[in-house]
Length: 194
Image (cartoon, rainbow, N blue to C red; front, side):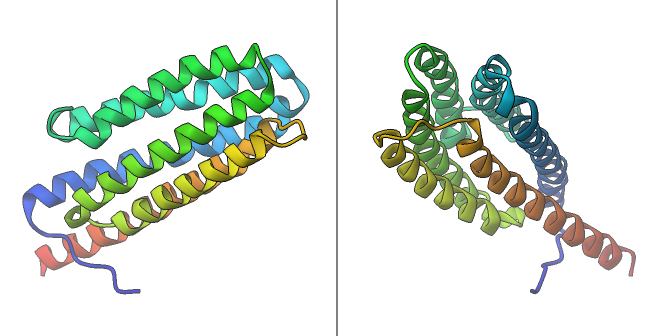
């Protein structure tokens, strides 16, 4: 693939921020997946905490990113993502008192909305680089959300390990974007030194 050389100062600082942000998002998601497949799988109270923490983390991460990138007003898709993720955190806490099917249904609705907001954010940020992965991630999130809702209405009892692959794919896309930006920034630095 052809990785572009990033040079203009505004894009450069935005790309540097996003590189760090995407590495953090990937790391947190991978840690969450590891916890889900280990202690979360065998300890229901830990699984409950993890299920509430996942959308809460997304709300916090989107808030920090929006503020770093010009504020919530300048980033309406992220502002909506913060709101939806915060409401999802509360909805998951309530759904845990009902059934894991209800939790999966809440995660499904959230994955659809958060995915669409991520897709819009990726399109808006196209010039900062590596946004094709964020757009793909957003589209896949919306698709996964639809699958979650269908499975939530089924007879089987889902668990945290049904949601963990979704988080793993998110981590993968964040990591791809972070690495892509790292390479692009390195090429840009070499071009400026030449």
